[in-house]
Length: 314
Length: 297
Image 1 (cartoon, rainbow over the protein chains, first blue to last red):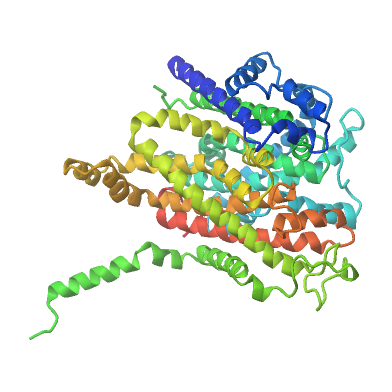
Image 2: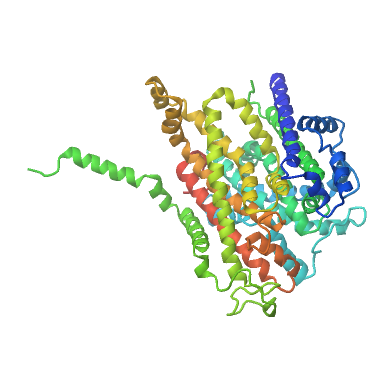
């Protein structure tokens, strides 16, 4: 276990270094002069020079790279060009709404994805199974931002039940906060729900075929005990591994969903930074989400090794 | 004297049995896969015959027709500039499907190459896979958005961005099957007979690792269509007035109240295409990769 952990930590560190390098390369990929692109074509020469010097774009590649890593180690990801604050501040300000949205969507995914998957597996090949699996494959096929817009038409335009967009903090009004997150979190969760339902069904069917399930049934345990205690716990193992993927999909989806519903979160920050060509913010947001993803995966792996005694990592 | 020798009948029966059990026939019996294939074919035909199917020029504005509801003149209605939605959706399929195909081809070639190299030349495995891990750490759409933001919005750059997103996943899957195939007896036999690396990889390992790769590429196609729509919606796809499904939805976003049809139909087109690809992918997986059975046969 100790050796496994050490190895896992080292490879995580290597991945983080490469992740940071890729984020750094985003600015390098801008064709022509990034300073000119960021300042805008109409900007005065002084302004362009100021930006070039501020970001060290006049320095050779390796100096820029060193500056990037040195800044990162001090928690400094540079200054935003348009927001008048540091990249880290801009990201931290917008994190709470994204976290709230992601948590809501994650909860929906977990509850409905698991229930649907288990129900489909227990009623394998019945109409319930077919109905759930049809819905699940539709869920992974429909663009989330489009479903978001359709829901706005349905629940905000045709009937005035829920707000069409905007975000209210929990301090302002808890009920308003909840209402403002209902539609976006459903739109955001659909894809992951479908995914989780499909994976849960497949692994549940696999587990129900195992000998220990047959033994439990043979010794006369009630069906619900067999399902909940014996089968479900084993289904959770493959399900835990996809939690990292679910998290990554949630952050991906947040870019479009926060744009559709005008939620001031990390995804919307990214979407607006594209328009304003605020590359430091794009780099920072990219780096921070990837770092979160890597760390969550590390946590999942460690929990996995801890909770499943059958797995030995050497 | 009988005209057929017994030996001939056996091989003939064997051939027929093999044909009956071949992947193609099993795929044809997979009802969901056939439905999926029909959806994909419809989208493909729409893209190919766009000129014949469209009733109007997709970019011709006609303010008199602005916000017109679906009618015989504009079967799916018209947008805020009076452009015909049906024609825009039809021409939009060219871009969306085209970007999907280009992404699949590029991802397939590069992903398979990395997967083969990584699985076959073991000393290159670790560095290559670390880079793939790092690329996979970025949420897909975010990485694609950042790359297109840097390179500029265009169809080619969308393909580059999506390829960067899907190559690592494809490489991983190819690598996994290469690791299994390279230990097979026939591969060892080929090595013992003195086959070179190129022959080993192209003749023995690649053909036997193709199943999971084909399945993965079908899903890459589906993701690519979805992601392209998202990128276009965010203004990172081919710039307007070019009709792409994401662009049309983005146009209609401000007119949900007055003209919901602008958003409705391109979204349906995306959904049906992606649904078709997903169903086809599920069917292919059931047929080619029985270990990963998700749907029933």
